[in-house]
Image (cartoon, rainbow, N blue to C red; front, side):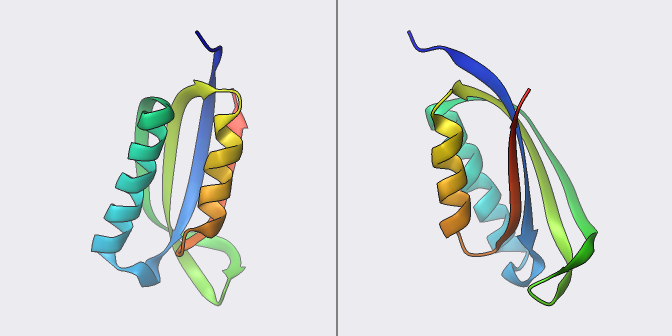
Length: 95
């Protein structure tokens, strides 16, 4: 049995994706996390103003996910965040 830890991740998605694609991306990450651990909670904050412009965008769609997983999974999740179109920013922290 592998040791698991609690993590919190927040991601900011580009509004240029459109509502349907944003929903698909959120579902993709929820499935990826649940396949490699357990999703404790998902809190979709929705559209918020960014503190500063990112790629000429002033607003983004915020999603907060709390999960438990093996200690090596967050590195893989971060890699997938970086190669996914529409992810403006992401952060993963260990609780």
